Image 1 (cartoon, rainbow, N blue to C red):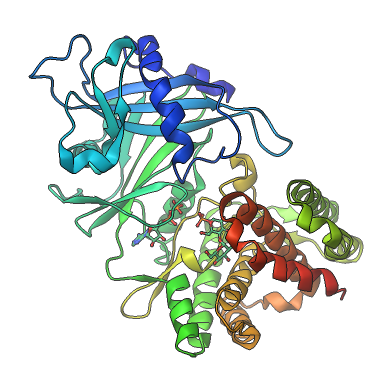
Image 2 (cartoon, helix red, strand yellow; image 1 turned 120 degrees about the vertical axis):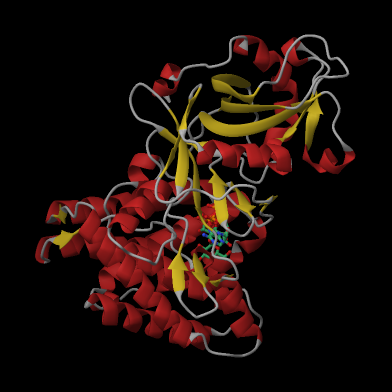
Length: 467
Ligand SMILES: Nc1ncnc2c1ncn2[C@@H]1O[C@H](COP(=O)(O)OP(=O)(O)O)[C@@H](O)[C@H]1O
Ligand SMILES: O=P(O)(O)O[C@H]1O[C@H](CO)[C@@H](O[C@H]2O[C@H](CO)[C@@H](O)[C@H](O)[C@H]2O)[C@H](O)[C@H]1O
């Protein structure tokens, strides 16, 4: 991240900070769910930016030393691997106190024994309601603070809302304020605008109501492009996510076809709005071949990382070869911005049955420029079809027909709203489903090894489906 060097370091004695914090971060960071570098040693930390949102104070700890809030962007150095960069940048919000009250004990990171913060206790600030409220206050009054820039759009943000940290499995950390707003704090920070801000803003401009519109956000200023750090959106109170609803339907022996149809429609509406709001470059024949070649590369990299994939590589390749062959005889297609990691867990159904899509960040492991590249909409459709399969596979006994019925209903719902049936180009659909299943194998091997059999079952089927 070369441009990171140009971020202003906003804290006067920040060079002294790292020696204080590094020993604590060594212990704490690799244990966080959102830490993407698991399994590789951390060799060093370097500070990208440091901003005191509330002064932390330095020097001897006295009885009156209060609470500080420190915003850090920290680069974590690790040995490179073929598919991973050596150093990722993470966002940390640290509370600093001389004494941690017992109610905040679960948020403890550690007690500082060296450097400028010696004697102070450092903890996860987002779990401290007072500090979380302070963060919301920054959004209410936009402006610049050190390296940080706060912005908002639309009506005034309500004050005095009680914060709580969401305790779901997440790639980031989200806070809910009084059931009115949800603030997503991105953890792994990439150069450039995060699509989870860019796309919902574009959809809001286009009048698409399928995605909660950002009401505020904050970024780190750099000499080139801003780094998106967090987005505040309306909280869809009482909404239930599609994954939980699908699992419940399976457990109760119910079909999910009505929901799948409505989800197909919602996906099509979002695609139509994204195509209207942002560029739709033609995907020429040569680029179709590049698309197939990129899928082959991803397959090969995944097979290197997950040996279970190796026997399936020749079978899976036939799906990508079919797309490359399509390049010679098929028409040009329009690429466009898409969700990029669509699955049932990224959908929310309100009490009145209205479906929304969330989390436009794309696949968390891919570099940002790749995630922001226009793609074929079938990519999202394939993601959702894989998700029906995941739901059916994670239920005993496996109910293949349930997933097949969802698949039909979803494609029909999509076709009804978009005017194009994704099943009309089976080579593209199969290749994108295969590519997604390969991604899932890698994802599960890294994050949830117990789940690996779920995408591997799909790999087995897709490798044999030589159509
Ligand atoms: N606008 C919203 N209203 C209600 N719940 C939401 C909203 N946005 C996200 N959530 C909940 O927060 C969880 C995490 O959000 P998500 O954007 O998927 O985070 P991550 O990218 O960290 O995985 C979701 O599974 C969903 O249940
Ligand atoms: O929601 P995230 O952006 O963090 O997405 C990642 O994690 C997902 C799992 O939480 C993962 O999704 C896979 O598992 C889901 C069931 O838990 C299933 O519905 C999806 O179809 C499957 O891909 C996603 O791939 C990953 O990027």
